[in-house]
Amino acid sequence: MSSSSNSVTLGEVSEKGQYGLNAPARAEGDGVRFIRITDIDEAGDLVHSKRAVVDASAAQIDKYGLHVGDLLIARSGATAGKSYMHKDIGEPAVYAGYLIRFRVDTARVLPEYVAHFFRSQGYWRQINSLTRVAAQPNVNAKEMATLSLELPSLDEQWRIVDILDRAASIERLRAEAHEKLRAFIPALFIKMFGDPVANPMGWEVRPLGDVSTAVQYGTSQKANDSGTGTPVLRMGNVSYTGELSCEDLKYLDLSDADFKKYELLEGDILFNRTNSKELVGKTGLWDGRFPAVAASYFIRLRVDPELVTPTFVWAFMNSHSMKKRLFEMARGAIGQSNINAKELKSIPLPLPPLGQQKRFAEVISATSGISNTADTASATAAALSASLMACLFGDAGGEPPSPSEPQDDRVEEVQ
Image (cartoon, rainbow, N blue to C red):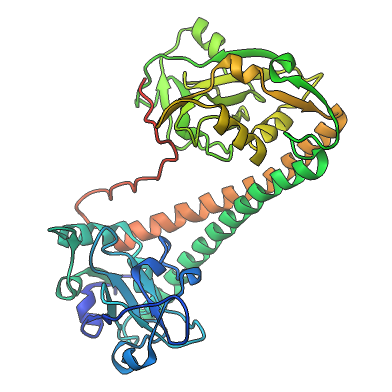
């Protein structure tokens, strides 16, 4: 950052914060677009699928109309601090009463620069310190005006916005690539093999246990956060759709004998045997990225490569029809259901020709490679973005708190 940068408050570079319109909204009919807190997603983008309007006679566009670059901040509730920068949406728009509008002086600051500030941890740290907790969190326009941010020159702001926009664009492309891959895999499976439960192509069917060389529960040894030892995969490390997520790991101090007993090899299938009824049965495929073991809430399945490919079995287990079957198989109370190893081995598995399974696996490997390339580019861009955001919008009071990630597991693992 240049030495010409200085610290200002939001109020010093914007008009007075303006509360939004209090008017009933409706989802249908003619009227003026009405932007509410629920229309803004976590990335600060407008969700057009939730479109609402207000009567033109009640809209008071002169007072509440939005201009391109206007900044909206949620002032109340669990979403206090959520923000949105208005863009050209092709129609007039006003905003609701639980939002506050700030219109910045563009001769001094770029709205896009402030919008990025609103996504920084330095911003959220300030919001959390301002938020009053009554029946629900609340922060008013006067308090928001005291938010402090660094103000480089306009030229430097443009450069910063360009870098952060590029990083955000790469992340969007990564997310789109993952979403397309999620849709592609089951579609390709159905095209090549048919519905795995209905088996319209008449493949030979055998119990899953007949094509397995090893079926074993994971280790029940208590894990730790030390960062040393052997990584252990837990329920949260496999998504509902079968993807691996290894950012949040715990570790075990295992003997050589125990490591050999529980070691995960590339191609091992991880079946989540205990979870909520909706999530029990989610299935991952270990890619051998590092030495690891699985926790006891997983059953490790190792298949016979002369009969089936691990990728085929993984895709079979994650198909829509099998998700439905696993839901019906799950036993137990609400919030804690189970499918044991015996039941897992009894699942009927269609057996297409091995060559066809291998072609399927090759296509999945190639498309996953493209997705992994996007992940690498996204991680690099995210690191640059995080470094720049910390430099610009952090404070001297210490490291920003790590944002909590949503967990898809509804049963907390205790080990």
